[in-house]
Length: 113
Image (cartoon, rainbow, N blue to C red; front, side, top):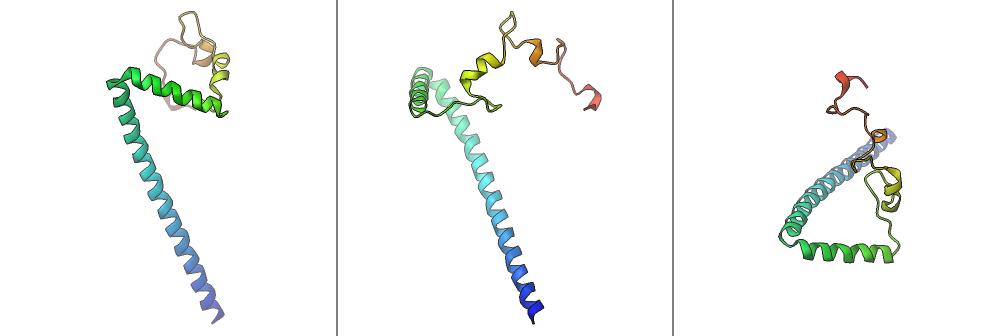
């Protein structure tokens, strides 16, 4: 009898865990789709009304700065530190130090890591 109770408790916990995982997956899919559509809408807005978009963008950026929120780049550095992190080369691009150092197209080098 104790084994059956323990087994039922494990089954209930397993079902709860599966429901939580399914809910998390559904939420992640919804959020991904929402962000993709929102991004496309923002691009269209910026293309159709570039001056207004730029004005709103600067207002929001100023609001963030006033609230002390840091702007981050994709690597997690703040925007203010980005300028010193990647020195430009003489053409204004990224120096060889931050690339593979050759002018040819990047490749996976034959699959080697």
